[in-house]
Image 1 (cartoon, rainbow, N blue to C red):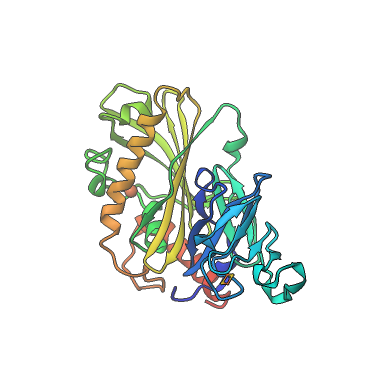
Image 2: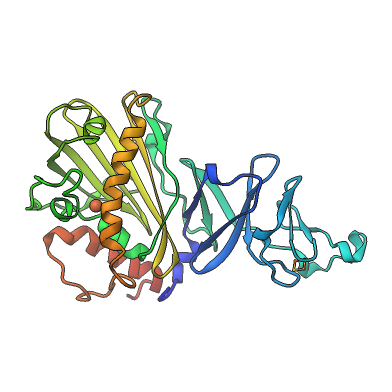
Length: 329
Ligand code: FES
Ligand SMILES: [Fe+2]
């Protein structure tokens, strides 16, 4: 990254809970490799993907009884990172202190595995909807996009691209003028804005809106939680409410993890897969646009031209500069 600064003390979703089982799972965050595995008690351990002996990749090893074994000389590490076996020494008496690994902070929320490489400066973004029994959660897989997470956050805070980037899904007849909006604390976690949009409601979009009309209008809000989490709420006039949570994690300056989670207040037993498919189509339109963009989004004021519709992005960039460089920026 250009500079990581306070980023190392943030939480990042690096895998879905479903992806991490009792086999080693490699992930890369902020250009550093980690390995995750789930122990017999269901808890996940995360350590650097680097054996303390000769730096072999532990993710190429195996997990037995909740302990990971290095593929090179067979050293074994328990879920707390302690080295518990050095086969060449014949017994547990030959384990030097430097053999032990330091586990990282890891938590599971909303079907996602969150990793903090440093010392957590705050909690994982709080989504109150997850505890609301009238909502059902729909998870999707973890994707890897060839674009900077900074450009993804900017995109997901932006509604001006709807009628252009999303012509293949919901944006064909969307209003091009973005009404003036003000930024506000949407709740204790997300900062952003509220607005009303009219969008196309063709094909799978009908499953999402639960409305048969070809055009629908809905109330939305879009907000961010630093550094790379965006939440959009959608309320259709028929009483359907949806929360879309999108989150990114920088693998490298121009490669990022991405996943989204949906919550709905209707019965999704029949429609859930169509709704997720539709959202994946929308997401793919963003991906095709963004993967043409090289490097990180210019962060300094004046680095890119901004208009009124970009106010949320401008504020996100201000806070991001502060996060990565300290309060003097
Ligand atoms: S490098 Fe891991 S046991 Fe030697
Ligand atoms: Fe988009």
